[in-house]
Length: 535
Image (cartoon, rainbow, N blue to C red; front, side):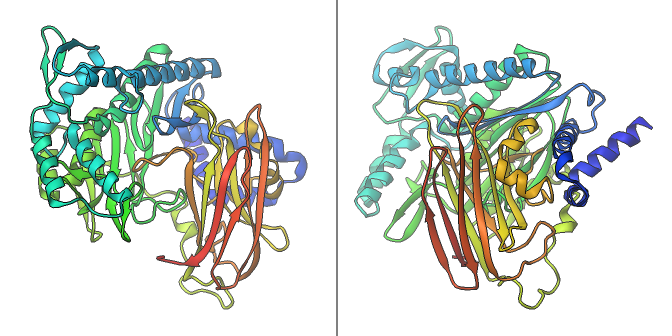
């Protein structure tokens, strides 16, 4: 009987329509109870029906500008105090390793070592391990992964600033430079000797390496039933609980777009690399930031590579390498390693999977059938050839690793009736009423379409604080709304901080429109682009 009760809680929580139906019978005085209930149900989902579900709950914290991107920490733990200990341990480890391995911090140990060219230098165990891993992956990928790929990146960045592509001579010099040995390691003395002056950077695997070490630190700090550490789309899942991980679609990578795949991950790492978020534009053509060190050319034959592996550093290294290698080479390399699976998306949209990939996929989301597009649009419905793109940038706070504010983005019709919630980002259910306008307008009705509160996302690395959302003209039940005037709301609230609300009325009548909203202390900028799809 107990198992049946837990199953019912999970089913009701996952069903967005249940929240909608419940909301229709709620009155204003029951809202606080409903919020508390929602928080309890979300926590139950996070436990995945684990026997300790009554004792533990997912406690989530989110940060911006950590290693230049976003950070999400999720701990399945009995109390806020234990979660705080785990969080502090993870953050301290991330900061410590950044001071050692960063290619951007001038006084990091790595950059100090780069300046000590030509002589053996005794380095930290972490720097020695990172350099050793690059040596190993340079060999295993036949040169597709190389710390001196920074040589190529610098050439292309300089050429882009001059509005030209690099010359054949520049590319030839770059290839010759990369082909040379860059350092020599001595395990007996734990020294590293810099052999040339080629610019080096360890980004291809360092972020994932740090994710793994941060997870280790959190697990040591307190007793956890499970954890997720996610830095910019590279993540590790530990403990007895499984986590649903969505893989971002490189061709539709708004925060609320349907994912490419949904995985059920337990005690493994997931990393995604791709060319769809970073690169340079030269004379109207887009060039990826991912380059082939063997040719000094940007690569775009694989636009997204996701790797699942036991170790995070391996997943990170392989995800980058699989964007450089041919799909056939990538599948052979993945098959040669135990418990490594991959999903590749090629430039022409082909989906390439390793043999064991399908076994990792999670069951379809319970609400998937509730938000399907109607077979035929009703007369006077939203023009399906149009979409609304919302770009927003969170305000940057001085220093590294600041907490992300709570954010709600939603649409109301001309009668102030909520049509669709596009994003609802919060960490502690008890603080959800601080999003005052969203709470008053929605009263927890129809949370369908919001960011998945119980899952994680693996994607190509995004810049810190920059997010994109999309509205396809559907309401929270998946039905197309009527054309006409609607108001887009962007609300932000920070614990012990400020409250901000932005709004813009738009006439969705099939005529393109653009709006730039005035920023504030929480949302630095926001733009709304009502446009034809595929632009």
